[in-house]
Every structure is written in C-alpha cells, then in structure tokens.
Image (cartoon, rainbow, N blue to C red; front, side):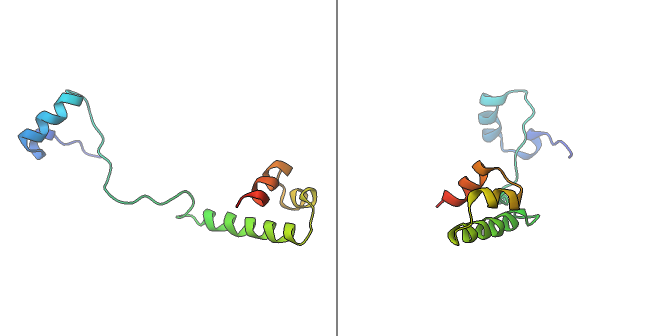
Length: 86
C-alpha cells in the first residue's frame, strides 16, 4: 500500500480538523464498502448453519444429546447450545 500525503488530497479545512486529533500520526482509512460476515466468502457459514439444522432435526426426532455429540464430534455443551438456540 502506498502512503499519500494528506495535504495533497484533503482540503485545508479538513486537514486542520484531522490534525486536532492525530497531528503527525499515520492514519489508516478503511474502504467504504460493506464487509462480508464471517464465513460468507468461504462458505463456512452456510456449512455450519446446515449442520446445526440437521442436529436440531435429529434432536427433535428424539436423538439424545450424548449421541449427537458423539456423531458430530462435538462436546455435549456445544450440542446443547445448538439445540436450545432460538
């Protein structure tokens, strides 16, 4: 990333206002676009949502929490969080 001199790109009035808060400091200004939520780009979010729906369906069909924990290699506490989440 190339650094730019703020005095070259900002109006004088805005530059003086920024200097009140960060005089002589290097600032990072993030892009003004929407960030994706965790796992949306890789597909992990949808994978875990589908897995959790399967767990809830099996629990509703009277599969015990212990059996689900063993089947999905998760702790009993994690299965409870998935099952009892609204």
